Length: 109
Length: 109
DNA sequence: CTCTAATATGTAGTTGAACGACATATTGTC
DNA sequence: GACAATATGTCGTTCAACTACATATTAGAG
Image 1: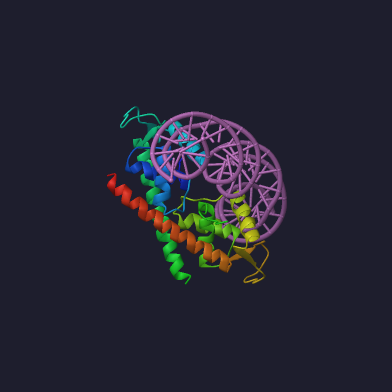
Image 2: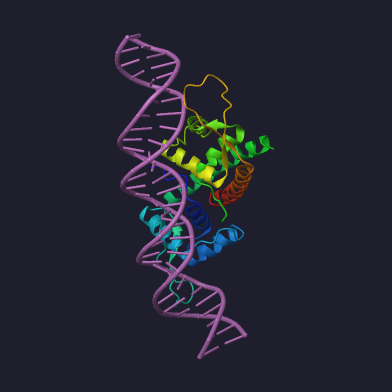
């Protein structure tokens, strides 16, 4: 039942939402920026992943903050406690893998 | 054409072969040990991954070292230069992700 | 000496996730 | 008026992991 390891896509979506609530398109741009251009999510990947995370209770819709003038359709999402918990677990896993591989990259010259 | 990100399975197989050449079953045991029991590769996963890596030139068969008394069928594999290169790239990617997530785990309390 | 666990390699079918292609509508800029 | 950027979504394909199954040898316990 463990959701780990997260896919890179899921990791970056949670990471971008860990900062503040965002809508889909903003997530794509934020992930591209955070990964220095390496990760560009396809819309098919993003919206499928968001639907899955909603179903699993990792994220939830932010209902109507209507911040500035609407017009353009935008749906905001934020992390749930469960989503934050999973992100922390994944961060811990990543730290362990990075340490493991650092050791062996050294020993392998 | 970039092979990154590696799946967790591929990462651990390369990691275990980065230390020294091994045969399939030994890889399974080594991965289980390195991951402190968290990652236990199913044989279907392992042998499928090995075949793929052979085809892609990440690893190669070690022909006949016949170290100690044969009898049991064992096939040894070692990393190619390409395999080592990919492993180093993945290690670098992992280090970056670990750093990114560490920052945001902190800022999110 | 027989039974069982560990060692060792493999295939087949299912499932889940990413991806590319496509579709649609609005807004800002030249 | 045209085009790029913003914004959300579906559909079909592909690739990898997983479960279950299949087979054979060897070491150790009783």
